[in-house]
Structure formats: structure tokens, C-alpha cells
Image 1 (tube, rainbow over the protein chains, first blue to last red):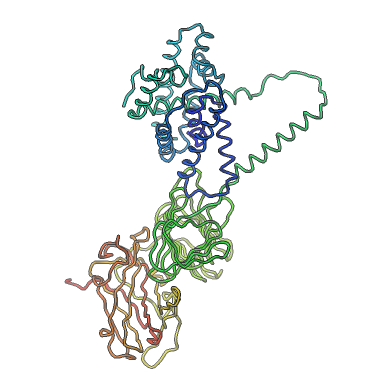
Image 2 (image 1 turned 180 degrees about the vertical axis):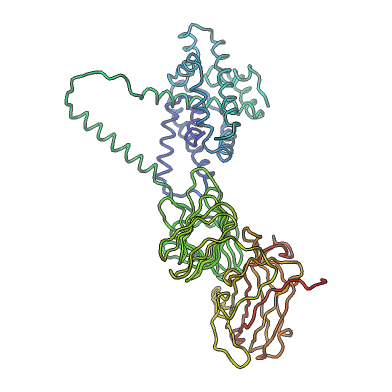
Length: 161
Length: 429
């Protein structure tokens, strides 16, 4: 994953909306550029970016009606720490692997992901659109996410070049 | 920890905002205690944003062209121009690399920090961050500073050295005005190459371990792993110095500029004082009846109201092969002092074909120097040299000798050196 994907993903976990998460990332990047202070290391920058993204996400949630229940701060910190550790270990190669894996998906699977995460439809709405049961949608999504996770790991294990 | 399908679905329901308070508590417990659950949640989040990103890009792919009648709408042009300007500005800002910095991670001995705005601090602490324009000086032969750069790279300057952070396009720039520097430039995502300017050369590396000794007329670059590109400033000649090779870069064009393999280490060294090249700090004195070669110790202000008198001799500058320190090695110095007081011998060590290791010193009492004003010859075994830092082992045996220095704290001693030798252990020892 690139740093952008990781920070956006962390913001997504708060707001559950990919477009808002992208906006939050843009705000964080702008703040980082205009902040004027230098970060001592890439780790310090990432740590600041995650915290800033989380705060922006929580602020956004406060302005929404029917906002989803946000995870506890301690859990979000744990997830961010794992992202930061992974960033140091893997750099940006995971993001490309994920994009490659998405390209290999059957059209039906990609359509499901698009409806849920790009069109931002709730699972109930997706079930209705596809004339499927809600449970079936959860199952398909769960398997798809697992398959993509496995696909990335397989690609990362392959020797480069 | 592996996760059941039910647990995965529970997390997806949580993300869909479908759970009641009791199930939310379950989710929180699961995420706190189960790394697999956290990994799955992170994977879903990553996939969600990347799916959106990919779809966003797909929607902006070129569509089949439609023929439409052009209608001039000035407000649309104005909006488009403004958007293009904002995008261009954002691109320029985003692609302008941040200025680099270096953090002091270890320090020993007198150092000075000179900020870019001219403020001077005579005490430098671990954690001090140097930014572009800032300078750090190690002020005595026994001093050293270790710096951490962005991206996991490391640098150490030692002895009498001066390093400044420079603003070099696309590089992490440094100026080593004089002294010794050991650098480990690690490969790291997004990290720019390191560029070091000396009075005679520019050394650039993306991934390498190397050391540089810089003087006003010569720089010596030794590469132990990776590759460094070295440019001679006198004429712009450039060469890649690969692992196990070195380059001597003179300010004079008439001197050859060639990359050569590093010679095999030897276990003794006799500093060529007659040729003069090994003595890197001190002042030459005219020959007298007893000594044709005399190097006088030079005053060195190492802090407020503290001056020492130093003569320093470099192995590399004397054109010697690397010198291996053995357990029975000895340092033999000939010289004179005009008062009865101690002198100190010091050695700088580094790992064989590697990074800076540490400094060791030995005190030579007045009794060992004989009568004041008379020439003395003192031989100090390695075992009498003590480490200058707690983390160092008692003996530097197995390391490489970088330099030897002799110090007197007394101006009236008029310390002068006539011969410097590093001897192997005696046969049968």
C-alpha cells in the first residue's frame, strides 16, 4: 500500500465512505505541506498523518445524521500502528499488488465491490439491486475480501523480475 | 489468528452500521484481542479505498467521441483555467521534496552546533535535529557524532570535522568541510540519494557504505559496499567507486584521478613524516641538530577557555594500506616536551571495511617522558588504551586503525612529534 492508500484506509474505517476518506487524505496532505515543520522520520510523519486523519474523520462524523458507530480510539490506534509497521516493512508495493488483483477479478465480483464501496450503497441496497438475500451479500463480500487479501500475499511472495 | 467466516461477516456488518450495542461490544473485543480480525478489517478498508480509486480512474478514461457544436461559454473557460491552475500548483507542491534533516543519535566529546541563522550552541544533545543550513562540528580528536538521516541512513563524523546540511536539488546534501565521515546510505522508499561535497570532490550514493576523509587539497573516498559516484571538482571527471575500491581526489588536475582496489590490510604502519602527507594536523617546524622532521602540536580550542595542543596522523593520508589492530599491537611515538607533564595518545578505530567503531586513549605520565626538553620515545601497548565510550569493548583488537593523535594540555610543553609508528605484536607474544 502507498502511504496515501494507508491514510485513506484509516480514514475510511472512521467515516466508511471512500470519497470522504479521499477528501480527508487530501486535507491531511495539504496540512502536511503547509504545516512548516519538518518530521524527524517517515514514521513520525505517518503517525501524525494517521492521527490527523482520524480527527478529521471524527469531526466529519459529528456533522452527519445517522453516523455509523465509530470504533474505540484505542482500537483505531492499534490498527494505525500496524499500518505504520507495515509501511516501514513493505513500502508501496502492496498497493500495486492490490490493483493487479482487482483487475483479475471476474466482472460480477468487481461490480459488487463497486456498488458497495464506490457507489457507497449499504449492503441492504446492494442486496435489493442484485435481487439477493442480505446474508448472501455478506458472504460474497467476505469471500471476496479474503480472496483479494490472499491474492496480494501471493503476489508479494513471488520473486520480483 | 485465523478468523471464521462468521467473524468476518460480523466485521462487515459492523462496517455496514447494522449492529446493535451488544454486538458492537463483541466487535470491539474481537478487534482488541485478535490480530487476524484487525488484519481483515485493515484489508477491507484498503480494498474499499482502492476499489473507489480504481473506479474513479476508470470513469475518467477517454469515452467514444461525440460530435458537438462548440459553444463559447466564458465562465466555463474561467472555471477550467482556475481548476487547472489549482491542480498545477498542487502538483508542484506535492512534487517538491521536503528538505532533509539529520538527528543526533549519539555524541561524545566537545561539539558545536551552528544553526542556519547563525546561532551557535556549544552543547549539542542527543535528539538535536539538524536541518538544511545547520552545521555541526566535532572539535577535538576524541570527539564524534552519529547522525540518523531520513530513511534509515546513518552518518558519523569524528575527530576534527565539520559537516553542514545543504540544499541540493533531488539529493540529501551535505558539505564535509574537513575531517572524517562514515556513511551508511540505506535503500528506502522515497529516500533521495545522499550527496557529500568536500573541498575537492562530490560523492553521491543511493545505497552504499563508505567513508570520506576530507582535507583542503585532497579527499579520500573508500567504498565498502554498494557504489558511490565521485566527481573531481578540479576538472569534472567522474567515476563510480564500487565495493572494496577507493579514490583519491586531489584539487590538482595534474594528479591522477583513478579508482583502485583497496589494498589488503597490514599490521604495522610507519607514518611517512618526511613526505609529510600523513600528518594532517600540526605545524611543521624547521629541522634542528637532532631531528630533521619536527611536527609541532597546534592549539585547538575545544570549548570555552579550554585549549589543547594536538598533532594528528592519518593512516589513509599517508598512502598506507589499511592497518589491522591486533591484541599485541603497540604505538611508538618519538617527540619532545619542554615541561614535565603528561601527554595523551589516542587512536581512532573503525571496523575493517566498515563503519566508525570508536576512540581509545592512553595517558603517558611525565615519568615516562624523561627529562623535560630532551627527546623521548614512548611505546604504549594496546592494552593500555582505554575506550572513550561505555559501549566499547576494552580492546579495539580486530578493528582498523584510522588515525593516531598526540595531545598535550599544556601550551608551555611545546609538544613536537618526530616519529609515529604502529607496531605489530612482538614475535612470541
